[in-house]
Image 1 (cartoon, rainbow, N blue to C red):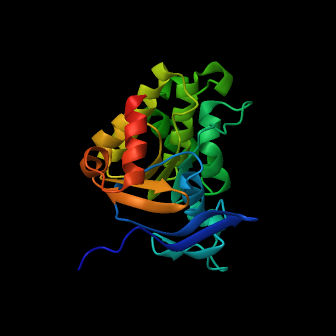
Image 2: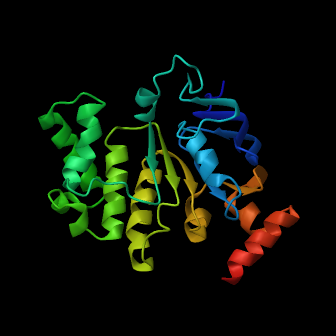
Length: 247
């Protein structure tokens, strides 16, 4: 008997007024799998990711994460979100708070930890992303790459079952990208389930178990990185891969 998937989204539709962004998407992710979503801007990748923790309310369809039906009215969505870490393009850190305070806020307010316990967990999370010596720096004293690593530390401190990454490196200067990808590689090696929207195709080739190509609100093609990047079967996928390889 195989394990049930940790993420099972079926028939997802999302409309913003007349704009139909997701058109019946199915996404099943196994535990410890790293799934990469690629595709042109406006294809629905970020919207799909945001539907997986109900930051966007799907217009129809179902989302089950770690056995919990996210769309059930009885579901405590704030509790569920502690199990679904999310890292955005913008770091969303509180500028007046230190790195440690940013990391420990949800541990105290949502998870109900004491300050001492939260600080111990928070320091360990910062150490894991290579920022133990920056615990008392505010975001303004950190580079963009360091701020993004604090944001990752904040998510992993809650010990989520799944991590969602929405363009985590696109706001960073090129020389800062490597530090963030190194942290993501370490998470991957530790067995974290990850769904990643990113233009970092080198990382996708090296680290992903599965690559999904989205266009116009549907998953057009999926397979191993080798299949999708070197031998795509769909014309739309071939055109997109050809375009990104020229840049």
